[in-house]
Length: 147
Length: 286
Length: 124
Image 1 (cartoon, rainbow over the protein chains, first blue to last red):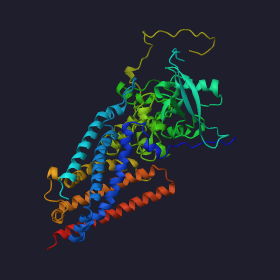
Image 2: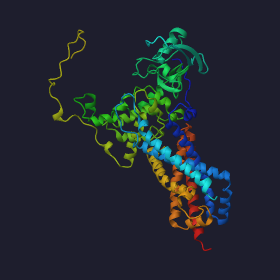
Image 3: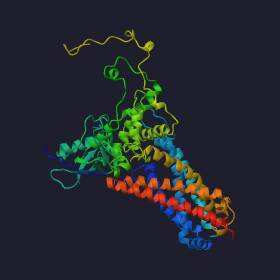
Image 4: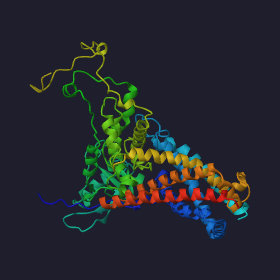
């Protein structure tokens, strides 16, 4: 039997990014990953930075002064914004993945309503709350804080 | 073909070609197809084959959206070619490509065997202990309308592979089963006639499980039959987690039994007419 | 993988819920304090920080917080890395590095919490 030749055709990492054709939920999935990685990276550094409190007050204070540079303040705000999105979207995902927002199985009648339609109102509410908290945080960090 | 002979627009079909015996890699070839409103992509492909290039290869069969053969990537999204009007997805140019996340056999023909292998690996059949009854059934199993509704939606799958092409996890991960096998795995897991929940739960806690799904939802968005594999996968996670946390052990109960004695009909019901006589001599014994 | 993925995922979601509350409180205290007035003074000044570090409850909170956060974050990272289709050998390396790294960081963070408690309570 002649050897069957196949051409590999997986999308690879491009498949995570989509290119503008996909639904909102797919982009939320990608953003969830990106914010998760960003928060993790910050967190791993954070463990070491906050460990300075165990060494001496002087080391703690000088470390905190180092990070009061506006560049770091903006970075911290981005981590905050990323966390708000990741946490609230994570809450939404946790509810969906445990079957609470998917809706029950029902016989498909055209035009089809899928679990995407069922969870969409909740998704919109979550995104509005995210926007409100992120803006409030920005207001707090950049206009109210004495840092 | 549509009856509308006016308002015909020439749509450029940019088709991904690949002949494994001649080509090193896939390339695009352009064809101009006159497309009245209502003409579907499959008709466009036939036009190309009959008038422009007879070597174009694709899979199709029923041409009415029930066999699942003609799944392909149209302007970047998976659709059934027989089910999709050209003018609905394209204004001037239609990119036609084989479904991604499957190897290409030739032109628009994907190698779906990876999907079928995983489908088989997920125990997509009812498993029960009463072997004689399953082999030689004496009567129906007793199932309520609610128990039927719990899995019926997922039984509409035509195995076209569109969901597999749309899944972002499958874009990189070749070990993830994918929405179609998982949705079918759930269809059998939740079927009250199945008795193998413990084995299924064990299998699904490994690589074959739904745990690499993170609800991008694209599988449900592109499914041409409204099967909603995303819903099936999340409901499957719920069953597995609830069982792990001991919150619900109902799936571990015995599967649906036969109709109770008093509900079984002994004689033919009077309101059901007899079947008409066979028209072919000796065709089948009644 | 010998550990059940069902188990790992359930803990991931559980840890996420815990973090939603704990890290939410942390974020509100640190970044929305001027709006919500949860903590006195500048939260990252030594005096404010030491006043918190003195408390046993705070030390316990931080250790639990650290454990859940490390589990949730590193399990998420492991998911992402394993979805990139590594070879069998690479999978083993990823699992080992993440597990060992997580344990090391947890031990280090626990030491820091306990040492900070000791330092804050030490006679001046």
